[in-house]
Image (cartoon, rainbow, N blue to C red):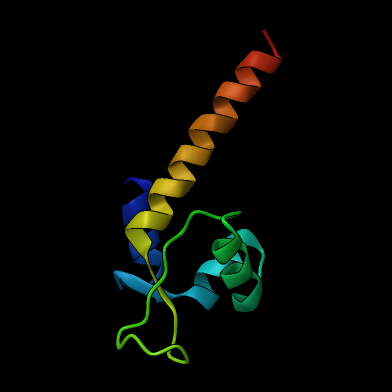
Length: 84
């Protein structure tokens, strides 16, 4: 199983999850996640299903998996460079 499949299973096979749930992976609340995304600190697109500002913000589980996989690759590279 890859990261995407594991996350899909974890989130009960929902392809989109609320930003609040995604924030748990980063250790942030929904408000902090939105602020960090809007500031460009976290590169995770979010949207609402109806386009209204007060609606629940959603993110793609697939995008989260890609971000986590890339962060893992970066961490492994940095670790190898540190311990050469």
